[in-house]
Amino acid sequence: MRVPMKVIAKASPKMGKGVFATSSIKPFEVVASVELVRQVTDSSPLCEGEKYEHQMYLPDGSVHLVAEPMCFTNHSCAPNSFLYSADRQYFVIAKQSIEVDEEVTIDYELFAIEGDTWECQCGAPSCRGLHKWDFFSLPAELIAENLPFLDPWFASVHGAKIKRLLQKA
Ligand SMILES: [Zn+2]
Image (cartoon, rainbow, N blue to C red; front, side, top):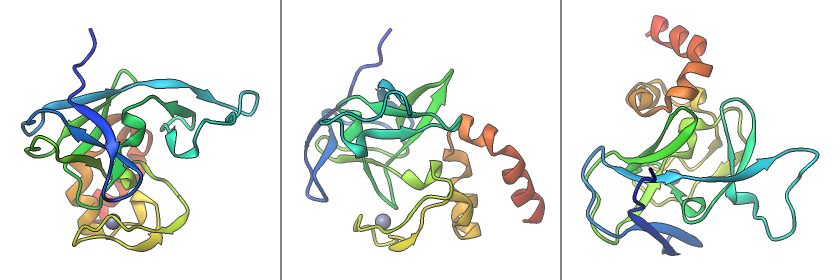
């Protein structure tokens, strides 16, 4: 059974396209499922027309192209949703109430490991700005605040690191 999609993609005031709620969404309601188009590998690399920003890096190290509309989900340092996987199927779930036509955002850093340094321009008052994208390099209080919103698969793959952080706390 497919999860109903409660979003559409359209131009975002933030950048390019974004996904926007088509109905009001309650906290912890499933917003959409994230469908993957195909795996990107050395033997089947990106083709012309397949965009870089449509890729998702899974905790097992595999890279996949994400299908529309969820490939247009923008990052926010103060997101209203989070990514969650069960049996390797990804879902976007609301963290809080989302109004009709509000942009649905997630925090990309919750599944970033040793990413590049680039400047976030999400516009949130708590925006992290220019920094290296790595969940475990975030300030301790941000890590603690976000632990409940980690993808269980990511948390399991990086469980030893999380355990050490909690033991130090
Ligand atoms: Zn930001």
